[in-house]
Length: 186
Image 1: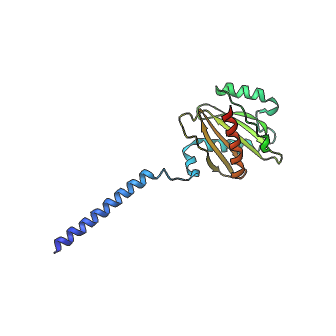
Image 2: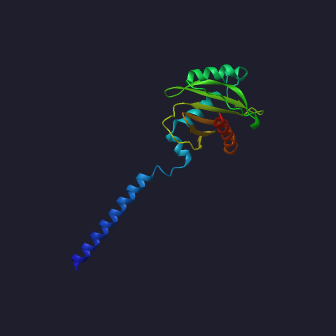
Image 3: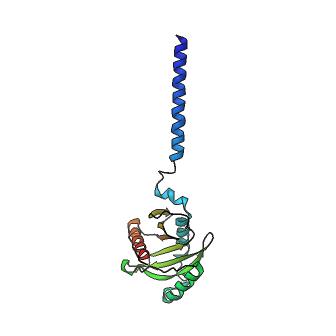
C-alpha cells in the first residue's frame, strides 16, 4: 500500500515538473512576441536616434538647421550626394507644417538626413531619414515615445524613416501617413 502511494506521488511530482518545464520553455520562446510597441522600439535604434536628434536641434532658435528652406535645391543636392541616394523633403503645408530646412547627421555607419518643419504656433517636427536599416524588412508603422518626444517610424525599401515631435500621437500619425503617401508616389 505504501509503495502504491509513493509511486503515485512520484508520478504526480514528475508530471508537475514536466508541465512546469514545458511551460517555462514555451514562455521563454514566446516572450519577445508579445511586447507592446513601445518596448519593441528598443529593438531598433531608429526611433531613439531620431528622438534624440529632434530633442537636440528642434529647440534651437538661432540655428535649428544647417541649410534653410530658402536653399532647398542645394539642401536636397547636398544630402543626396552625402547619403549616396536621392532624398527629398515631403511637402507638409496642407497639414500646417512648412519646411525650415535640414541637416546632415552621423548615423551608426552612414550619414543620416534630418528635415525640420514648423507650424504657425512654432511647434516643430523632424523627419529623420536613414539608409542604415536595409537588413530590416519590417514595413509597418511603429510608435515609440522617448521622453516627451513621440515618434512614428517605418522601413521602406532601403530607407528608414522616423517622424518626431512633441505633438499628440493622433496628430503625428496623420502627418506620418501624409509623409508615407508622398514617399510612395515618388
